[in-house]
Image (cartoon, rainbow, N blue to C red; front, side, top):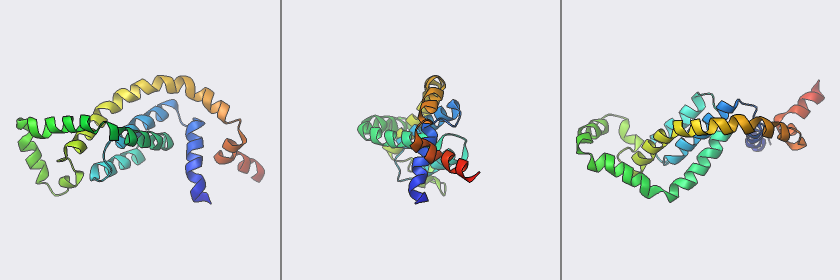
Length: 168
């Protein structure tokens, strides 16, 4: 039962804005960046480790990663063009790619795939501007939305307010 309620609890926590607005914005931005990278390589797993290691809103990051994963399917030609420009057309980078590929673990990152490299570069390039763009709206709207949502009985139950008050 608790396994089923944990995602709902995380969602309620994110929507009730119990984290700071900056953590919410950072979670959205980093989750979006991680969601862009194809999930079949080491880069995606490293992105998840970074999300777990830094203090961001994990529910917001998860939601942003799901949205970014769906949107990335539509824009794969853009990522392919960026990756192709870096892997194929930029001849001065070939020694770097060769040296990286000859390292023990680096080939598991899938950087030699144009789409993977393209989404990794685009995700890294978009993360900070997206964070800066989201901080303002999160600071303005998260407290009011959180206060409004905390009035609902279902949100109170998911956050444990009802259980905590009955135990004391």
